[in-house]
Length: 284
Ligand SMILES: [Zn+2]
Image 1 (cartoon, rainbow, N blue to C red):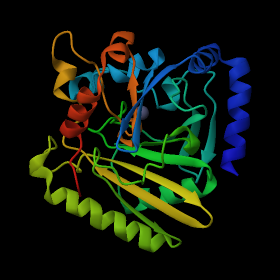
Image 2 (cartoon, rainbow, N blue to C red):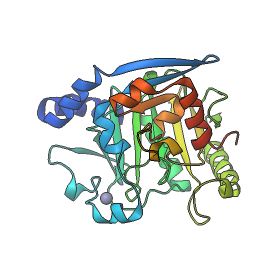
Image 3 (tube, rainbow, N blue to C red):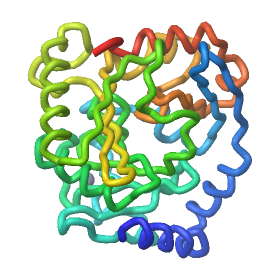
């Protein structure tokens, strides 16, 4: 199973790759606080290692100028990959959020963009990673490499509640089935529905709808969840002296990553409500 291979790779890399070891070590010291929104618990974490991703510029000009960190030629020499489906390299993530956090990157430099075949790959990946949640950050909805296709995977138990539980703060839709055809059919319909609402979002008409996709495989069934996005970053991110919160998929499950200590200390329930109202598309 890919899961077993990745878990053992992670243990090896913790011994051999100092950047990864340091960041995993720091993870055990992450500070947390909790906000209860009528039974839906939002957890805020201060994770300084995430400053690289949270504050990263992801505009086209910046992306075009930097060396892609998911391309094999540019990856740190310590970052070994495990081949998956003949077209991906499954990698350890050296800037973890989850206690075990992996990036599954296409072997080729190809755009972050979802399709029927990518959805099928996501189902295959999830089936190999039982106990994990696999997820996809849209190119303008949290991906820090919008130019290189990748999924991520992290321990499902790390999330305070399953990402598919309904909640008033974050609009999302979920669907469960034991058949691949039903799941991908549902996902394609849901994505088409989001496309119709594109006017309400920052995405241009020709781009894919702004969204995050999650998938889990449990007891022979997949559960896929899609959350539509209005924006990548909330207005507070751009205001002087304000909160630098940059929501990706993980934040849309109710775990807000604060890379800077001052943001972790200052954030309030009202800020959280406002951030989700701005970045979530609401009911799909
Ligand atoms: Zn690349």
